[in-house]
Image (cartoon, rainbow, N blue to C red; front, side, top):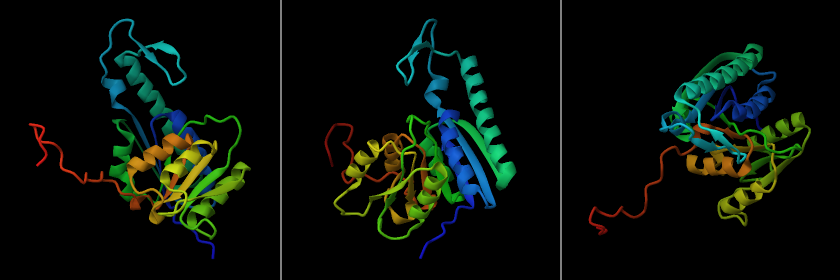
Length: 247
């Protein structure tokens, strides 16, 4: 029987408005016909804001261009501009379909900020700017890819709206396609979005989620996001002592 995931509270997390924009397009699809609470979380890299600068210092952009590093005043203006654009688009969507809307902008680490927020939300949409010229498939990670599931339902909904296909990757523990191979396949699919259900454990930790976002290079939709393991796993071995010996 087809399932209907709870998506009443959706949080969009991103490190820039360019990243958020792609996820916000998915929000409009998921929110259509529903009453939802929306949240936006913009987390810019703290290193950019606090990094020391000197005259003529240059930075390398993601495209490989050399640019003069922004001053602290310019960085503050950039943060304000990014936040204004993100908040404005979120408010536009909320005006049409949302019961409530909240927004926060800060500097720091995105995944650490997500860890502090996930308990309050049903669905997390991690933004990633669109890098593909053509519309690729919507990929869903599923422990039972041959049967109806929440991840499959959401992937099908997104794929239909984006006029593309939905394809499954087998994420069963111990299956012939373990996580590293799943990540490798996603890397080659040019996906438009990736959907996972954290309640089914295809991805266990925020560290794995971060790697998934990096490999997929597209927005990642996480259902039942509160089921993610947000605390780092403890090492099986104690760290070395100051003298270098292991107790």
